Length: 422
Image 1 (cartoon, rainbow, N blue to C red):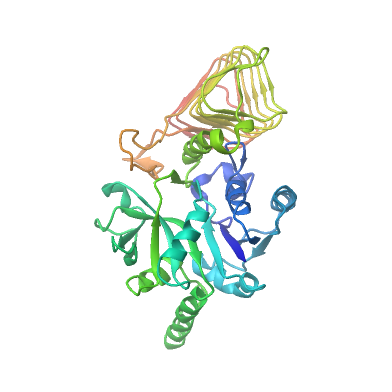
Image 2 (spheres, helix red, strand yellow):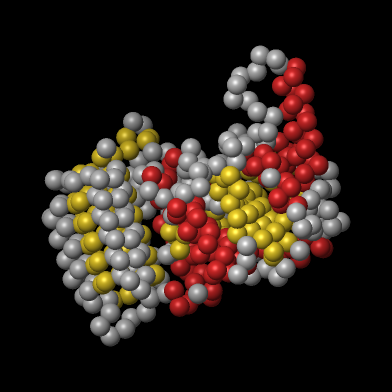
């Protein structure tokens, strides 16, 4: 029997996702029309013998999360539970804290996934790979190839090319180590808890030695990457399964549009029913577009490529939307134009207004390029990125909003360019 643990973080995390994470916990932000986490859960539910999915994080239980849990259980016919940490315990501390829950029922192995990645989730392949490599007690991490420069922003894996054993692991090195990076998806056996336990014991000893410890230092804060993998590398226990399928992080709001594109593209294989098609009396669709059935769209609108439209959205005549996410209840009035933007919940864009951002996509000519976790400011100026409207933003008619971030509940009265509007 198998289980899955998804690490969903908490409200202090996901700050680069503001202003969108003010309204909804980041793991429930819709990517390609469904909450980010649902892609993980769909992939897990397809794995034979998967008995339970546990979400671990330090969000206060809230209405959205509870609603999503009950929906996921009904939809995928598998128990999905949320375990709340009392504080941020790190990627290893959370699973160690709830080890009894994870091990109850005696799973032979379990997957650990970070919520903020988008991937094709090659879980069955990782299981087969674990059977072929090392003994049944080996641990497997999912890796992918990045380019040399970008690899340094991730955990880097040096492997034995014959056996795929991880010989060396460095989290975000300062010089080039390897172009194989950690995808944040792992397959562990219960034995991993002995290794995490050893770190926990060591942390406790260290704290006893330094009596005057800072109050925030807890023995339970354990990071899988720096504390566990770095030590396990080279001991014949940790292996890397390399995937050449799509994978990306979802750190900033801009990367949600890119992740949306990857998932919409995958829908051709997995969920063709989620992709809109050109029909008589319907809007013109070009490329991959997701439209929620409750959206009301004028037949003269042109949508796509890479557009997802949420519940109850209204789109007027002659509207053009491309490379954007329109969240529920938003209204795009006649002849408005939305490019490379995220339009927040219940926002309104006036007639003939233009809302446009600059895409932060990886270099399309480099097959190994990943999305850069761009800094908000560069050389004292706002880096051009996608335009984000928080919830309940009103954009008047005939203005241009370019490369800007508008915080929730704003009524704008003129055009803005390269600004954060507080």
